[in-house]
Length: 80
Image (cartoon, rainbow, N blue to C red; front, side):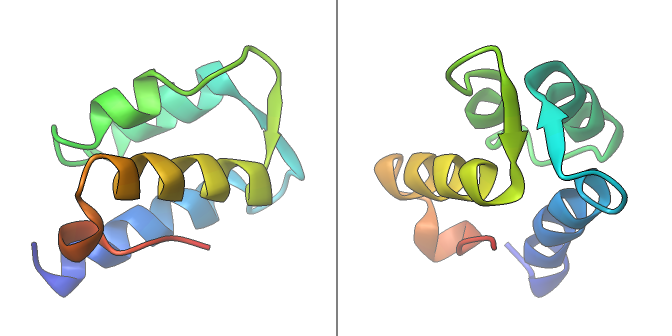
């Protein structure tokens, strides 16, 4: 994974919350598809728990937990 790929994941999050405080799970999945995230990350996004809206902190916590839980933190780092 290059630094560009790590930055893409962070830009993905930035774009979701550019002008909103909460984002639906469906919006998160659709945006991930348009950002062409690494295929290894898509299942993490597609399997986010719950159907409600996510604050940025909640989404970052969920993604970071999934990244660490799948042993991908060395490759993808974490997001904020």
